[in-house]
Image (cartoon, rainbow, N blue to C red):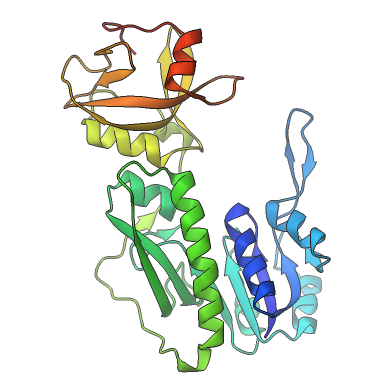
Length: 301
C-alpha cells in the first residue's frame, strides 16, 4: 500500500522499518520539527526524521497541519492509507480523510483504558497487570476510534517504562503489518463506554518521591517514570534520580535506609533502589553509586 506515515519519537522508528520491510511504499513521512538538544542546544532531528533521512524518504516537519500548503502536499500524495504512531499533533479532519482508507493509529494501551499522551507510564504507575497495543481507525476524538486489532502482553513485576516501551513498539510494528495485510477482513469494534481512563501527560511535579506512600506505590512510580522524567529524591541536598527498584522486606520510619544496600522504608513496607543518577552524571547501578556516595543504615532520604 502507499502509506502516509506520521510519527516522531523512538517508539515510531521500528514501525517505519517494519512497514518498509513488509514491502509498503512510504509516500512521505511527517514528524515533529527538530528541537534544540544537547549542551550546545543545536536543533536535532527527531528519531523518525533521522531514520527517514537514512532511508532516503520524503520528510516533512511542519509546525502546524492547519495551513493550505500542507493540506495540498498531503492531498497530492494520493496515499492509500495513513499510519500514525506517536506523532504529537492533533490531525485535522482533512488529514483523516485524505488517504483512501483513512488513517490508522497504533496506540500503546488496551483501549478504552489509557487514552491520551502517556499510556505506558500510567499503566505501570497504576499497577496494571497487562497492557498492549490497539490498531485504531482514527476519528476526530482523542483515541476514540473503532479498534481493528488488539494485542495484549503482561507487565513484568520489575519492568520500567523504558523496557515496556520497547516491547510495545515491537508489538505495534507486528500488529500494523498484520492489520494492513488483512484490512478487508477486519471488523471495526466500537470502544465500550465502560472502562475509559485518560493517560494525562506526565508532569515533572509528579516525579518527587513521597516516602510516606506505600512501598508498592513508590516502586511503581520509580519504574513508571524511568527513564523520563525520572522519579527523584534528595540526598545530602542533592537531587538524585531513581531509575530502577523492587519491593523489599522491612519496615521503619518513612525515608529511612534500613541497611547499607539502599533499602528504603516507605509508609508501608520498603523498596530497594537498584539504579540511580546524580545530576550531571550517568546512571549507575546501586553498588557503583554507593562507592561515590556513602550511605548507611539509619540515614534519611
